[in-house]
Length: 500
Image 1: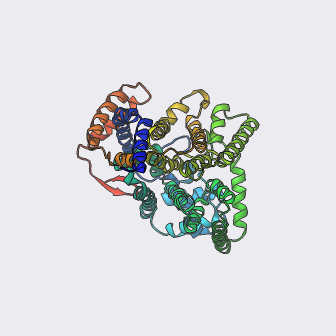
Image 2 (image 1 turned 90 degrees about the vertical axis):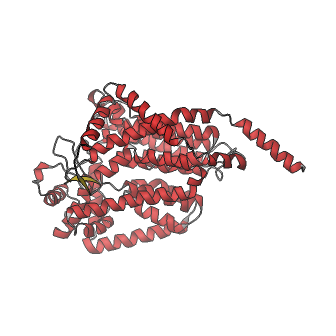
Image 3 (image 1 turned 45 degrees about the vertical axis):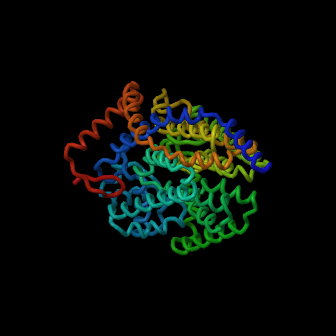
């Protein structure tokens, strides 16, 4: 045996001693509970995909189904019928939505179209289809985007631990952001796919085509593109930035030629006006996330100057922290943590961030769990499980407080994610020896089905016993599931199920 092989054996033993067995033991204790928790969430979410018609909520109520899709469809219909002159006039958009739904305008709430003019062009084509057909096409595109993002990550990272990758996929599908995206007909799956493209194009390798594609899609909600653009500026990715800017300029030129150059001024005017809206026109800051929603929950509806000052200070602190944390000698070996920090920062600084956009941190969290080992993997697993639970119970924890004043725990969790990822950037990566990585990848979990069964039973007993917070939701979920098994017939339409 050579001296080099002896040294390798000793290093292997040192690595083994550095990572005790407690994470594996903890995983065996927590996995059943987590799987049962995810199973209950899927059961609970299924109630909201029951047979129902596409609709917007009425004033003073909250009972929508594909309401955000109706906003997109209504914008396209308005342009088809009357041109883009009133595209950013909320009453005109509401009238178009009412015509599409076949209801009076005063029977639905007012939800304006906030996206840039260039992105109404595909909606014009979509609005040429019947409402139900357009909903199927629109929802199919969103689900394809999610599937593509998950498949890309699975193809690259799934070999590390297929069982763990399956658990993470189940966690994502059963999460509240996934449910909100599908229920409301939003485009957050496109944004998730865009961040995955950014990972492969700007972090994993250099591919300007993927970066440009990601930036163009994220520009649909310009606030989500701020952090990626800043990162590309700092890293001097001039070619990708110029290509994205050129493509955006071309799209803007086409929109200007089709709708007139003043359409951009009307869009900017609507955005500036929406900054002052509170609990109207689709802007419910107390039900949102990020620093703006955090200060709204903490301070209350009044004190606008205090809220704006605290939000600006937190946003500036986030930017400075990310800039400082990224200047480390370990940045090349900690690309996943850098990616995670930027994703958390992007959602934190967004002034209007709804629940569906919380699906974005799923990509970096999956990478961190699959790529890290030992204590780091256990820590990120625990952190992800905490965020999953906080988002699931967010409205019970926040909106149940008096006068809608409280602590937005999900926003705090997002801030903690940015800090944890930034802190990890400062530490060298002590990975396990390749032999231990191979062994860990081979632990595919033959007893995963048993864990799921045990977890489901444990979750049913535990969550049904929690009074008020979860117990009633569990009872409703069980009641709905039982009634749906009694012989009702369903057919697939839109994104959920529709009664025969």
